Length: 128
Image 1 (cartoon, one colour):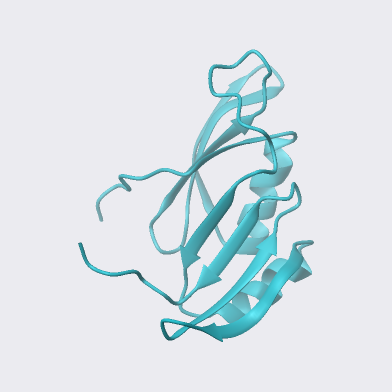
Image 2: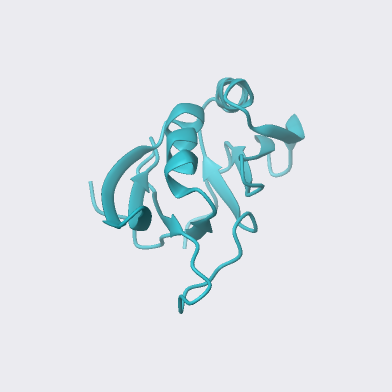
């Protein structure tokens, strides 16, 4: 499998807790973790489908000072219903329930424990 070429990136108020949430709620796997004292300077996680996510603790003085809780990410999954049920059981908040949506996909949106929006759906996109 090749490495992802697009890496959604976000900052967190409590990165270790958010990573733990992503593992339990979404089935992500931590593939890299770099600490700077008590903070997580850089982390990488992979999705069950092979996509990548980069994240770390928020720092006001960073050149990459993204606002925690402001991301919106779409992830392709085969079983939207099970994933949403799992995420809600781990503390995610339902934003848009599972439904059928054009162009012929099943989709739902949840907010993680920091407010980032995660849409999970069966739509794989169009070929380039």
